[in-house]
Image 1: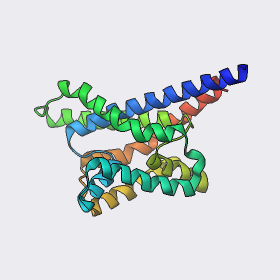
Image 2 (image 1 turned 30 degrees about the horizontal axis):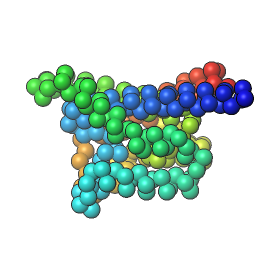
Image 3 (image 1 turned 90 degrees about the vertical axis):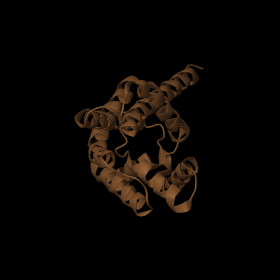
Length: 211
């Protein structure tokens, strides 16, 4: 009975930590989206599929996630759990919430330096959010899982794996006609290193407090 209660408590805490990480990711992504200078690599490949195959953004995003999920199954299916489901269905909602919360305070009349600062800050917040939910180790989204799977399978530093995956999907997205810009470049450069640090501290928290 106590074991079941403890397991339920751990499950609830992990789920809440994943949702918090995804919410933070949504806020950061919304900041980059509002600047409109290009967003994350995942958005570029999603837009590329949308343009190349004449389907809606939503359908394109789902298709991209399904394709990467299939690859993840072959690479490391142990990474697929509740976090995978939450990332697939809730991240888009949290991005919409982020836009709703931030849009009243943002205007296109901001100076270029101000927009650049918002863009970089958004990229940093996004990476912190991604690292927070991935570090829970309770299932992760298909695209994020690619970097983790490569890191585990080939013992390549996570940052290098993330750079490789981000660059690959960005190039594929551009080849398909997807939009990209300064935000995409910023995202590629800073996401991996920041995620690696946050994942480390997130996992240390889990080992210390959720044994």
